[in-house]
Length: 146
Image (cartoon, rainbow, N blue to C red):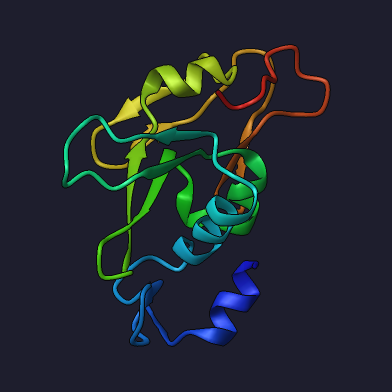
């Protein structure tokens, strides 16, 4: 499943699924990550810790390919999806920190109080393209997202 499929299959309002069903009220990226969890597995699965109420949670680290498909995930480090006892799928997301950007080679990044981060690299003229922080080709600071 891709973003196109979600946009065609569900009624969306400001990036949130409004069609009745298991994804109602969730961001448009949730069905894609849920399908990945069922088919391919996730980057990490949080297992039952002995709590009878615990639902298994699939954790996905957001990578550049995810950002190209879902630019609204820029600034998000990881997403988590899980299903409740009634079959509804829920999600949560965790924002990137300054340390996450530095680990990706954007070593001159600064925190802007009203806008999040100003993403910069000391070795190239990095830029934001379609919401994705990008180094110039050949930049020595270019690293895979952690």
